[in-house]
Image (tube, rainbow, N blue to C red):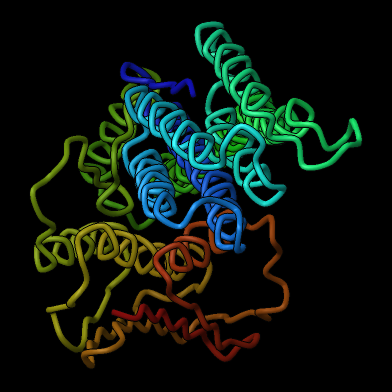
Length: 408
């Protein structure tokens, strides 16, 4: 059985080749185990036939059963150690068993002894036909095995009856044919299964790349929305309520961000208007919150923080949580029409919770459409990506409360 190995391939392709490799190994094991099963059928049938009174002389029966046990042992070795030497061992033990039973049965064997000879030649030895169909060298050995066993069975006159269908050559060839056809079917099925595995692997790879591209598109959209778009919104409103120095600093960060994106990098924003363009070893929550406070203080929005400053989330999930929270505060600055917002953080050991409240204009939550990039992607989708949920409580003229919850 041939085995494919991909040693220089990328991860998805290597996993595909590994699955093919595992299938080939299992297929080879199946072939050798089926050879053992066919062999056991032959030795069991021979043992039962020899147990019939008058099959062979009483003193010779011991040697016959000894060689049958030896042949069965080689079948076990064949299944446990699939190797060319194991095949030779089965063939040699089978010829020895065939000769021993033939000599014990005499020149004119009884029908029961003839049946034992046929079972040994056609199945006890013929079982190796299951594993001799992959290469031309194996086919040559297969033809040799069939020729020798048929010849020996014929010389021993192992005919079970007078009819041609019960003659030794026909019965022995029938046993070899069954085992060989099964081996050929198993071998020919291998390329078809490999092609199917390759097709499935290729389809999976395409779907995975499409999913990754879609996920990256959403991440880029959130990144631009939370950074460059926020700056453009401030410029559209002539920067009212925003310090000129803060505007210049934020615009410079946006310019650097866009340049890095154009060069193919994947910067990670720490908050709206402030970015981390290189990977950091860990996210310092207090420092991040101070950055967010300073960013909105310079934008004309006073943010009052309440609750714990320690949130038990791993770095990637904490970053996403803070970004979603920051976008909620940004929405207050843009739409609420107030200069104050309240943010409450809590961690009860099971859920990390962030609540953003304002007493502004409010809105009808049902008006949030799926195309709303700011809230749907930067808040809801980002929170759902880390296993969290978002709840919105608002109505026109009654302010807004947004609750972000992320399980630990």
